[in-house]
Image (cartoon, rainbow, N blue to C red; front, top):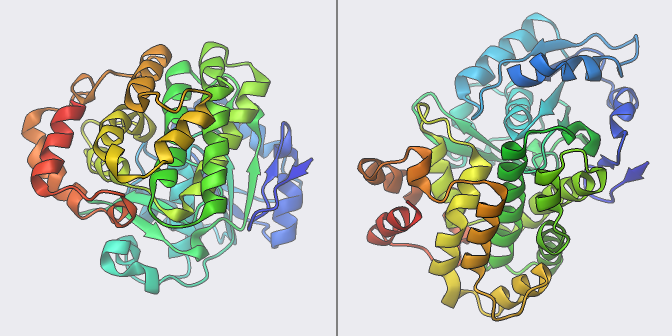
Length: 377
């Protein structure tokens, strides 16, 4: 069994889910709250997890995590945690379930509301040690299993970021077999999430060569190795699934040096509770627009990315990403996802306050934000 030499030492390999009882025992957890979503409940994957638990473990469940986790959902899960006397949290599912699990672990021993701990509300200085949380991803996209953040739609409608080293899961189990059979469109959207994390981290002006190198390796796995195409074409391709989960984990390791305007825009769009847009798909659709916008502001980084892709240094990266999106079945623009021009003013206001802007290589003006959304349509 492979164990990565990262801060929370993830178990990473096919069949890694079998380590769950050992991980729980090491953390002293006997009554975990398992945060997951209705889809995994319907597929029977919760039973798959439950069957790996030893008899000493008495789990409780919250299986109503929404596609974009909300403050209300965190409050509902927290109520179960408290009433059932839980002593730890397991996030089991995609990034939404993992982020919700992190937030429950936070609020289990912090006062106030979830929104109080967002970056926008000065939460970075308020977050102290949380209760133990274990992350078990079932998609290959967010990398939330190794990241120190969570993204939550607050009760006031804002989609905000919680960030602290205390939010990094105490342990992670990355089992690519849990992603086998994931539908092609979700595989595609999640894969573009991982790729966007790698590329935006590379473009960040923050100087962190090790993180950048990890991001470049993730790009190579996704594109040069054609593992995203392979996983979309054949969901049972175990090697492609392994590489895509590794690229997802690497994406989150890389974005320790920050993200950028792609995420500022996708967070704004993801806050719309009527559209309920998939975060990774948004990232993939928006990425070409921001690549064009940043082209003359990132030095030789586009050449590095092109080499990692296995392409010529002169490759037109935005066109390359658009071709990839088309091949894996993603929408050609935001308009195809239900976004209208009438929404742009509100989207711009949200984007301008997103913390991801702190590490974007080129900060747009209000007028440029408006044009970026129009270009991405």
